[in-house]
Image 1 (cartoon, helix red, strand yellow):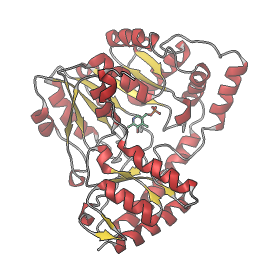
Image 2: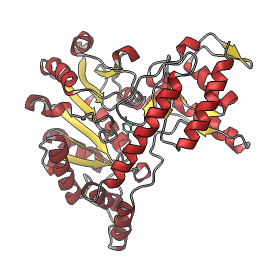
Image 3: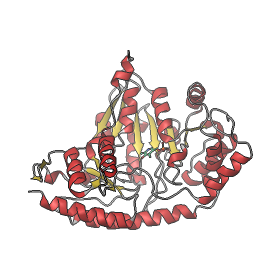
Image 4: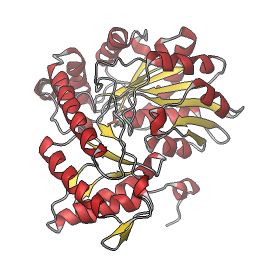
Length: 397
Ligand SMILES: *Cc1c(COP(=O)(O)O)cnc(C)c1O
């Protein structure tokens, strides 16, 4: 088959390798505990499911406007005002097939060959992958656990070049769970205001946040910044709707106009009845969200405590999302059961074989010193899995 030069640049997801192996082991009858999941273990709230059922019965089974149902765009506009203190008209909002799809469209619309996009790391692997798909160059700014996985304005300034087109921010962050404070965002904003850079702010974990910390959108800090910001969000995490494929963004009117053109020639609208369900998610009762977040917080406390008691492991206390990102490189160079652990991939492989625990190597998030554990799984699985992990790590000599 003759493939295009673009196709030849596509890389397989490194994070998928472990989950594929976990599935194979499971199929062979092995008891594998999965800490790799990037989605809530809760079901979509009942009222949202009902709304979709009604929508289908009522005929919401046809195309909608490519950019989304007017009613959903209006409800999102109100949500942004109410929760994020952001003024966007419904015409400045587009609905797509998940936030990942939104981010892909934005990469296509905003960058191309020769452009650089700054991404604070560790980061979700999708950001650099999509920037590369658009022909541009991702520039990762590394940060460490000691810095709480955050960059500051001074560091950011050093990475800005004449080729820099924009930055992708993600707070709360996947994989680290880090949440920027308003003061820290101010510090970044000061530097960004001196530039013409676009700011993509992925706020998909905004409600999964603990310890009374308040999430804030950098776009709300300054009108001049908002003019260049695109707020990316979706329903997957807050409303446990990963399978529904529903996300959205709000941004400058001229960009959104082109976004509509792109989407009308590619996917057209997101699923019609999922959009109606999205209206219910945003306007209906929010008690299931609060219940889910309280449970995530309880699990987070347990997981962080357990990890810090393991030999060679240190783990920050994340303030949001449902991941922890423990540092494990103190164990690199050690060996057990025929495994020598030199990298995060080796570590994931060793823990899968020896402990029957699947987690994601930090390499997939641009930092090889860490692994990512998702606690979007039952307390029972966490107890068993972390116990087995501790035993396996103790064997490393
Ligand atoms: C899960 C996730 C998304 C997108 O999810 P969709 O299901 O595509 O809406 C976006 N950003 C981050 C950081 C995520 O972890």
